[in-house]
Length: 132
Image (cartoon, rainbow, N blue to C red; front, side):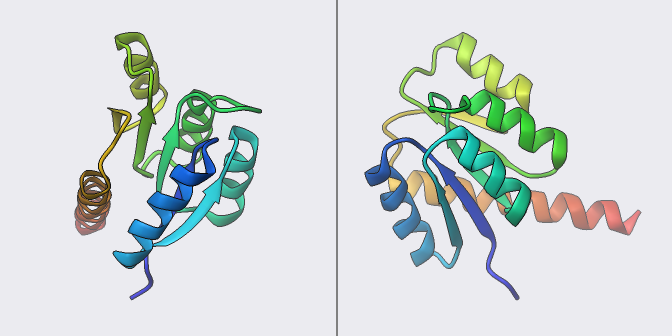
């Protein structure tokens, strides 16, 4: 069975690298992106199984990344993470297609568990759709 691919998007390289190291230890293949335009190009080229994205990004916002990914692949789970998770941003992220919006800082164990759960739920949903 192939490892799930996670697209990690944040303009803070240390944070992207920290998330990637932790998720790689859990067996995931990680694709780093440091701005919204790079994230959308990687999404289109690599078709990741899940996205973890900051909302405040250069070149294109996290909301644009979420909207782009959701329009292209509505079943792809998207976890939005931001330092400014006000109600308006949370609502905008979820309206664009994010599964959940988390406030920074996010613990590595919390993110690992959330990624695992989101991928598992998505797999169950897809398999039940095929069973119909």
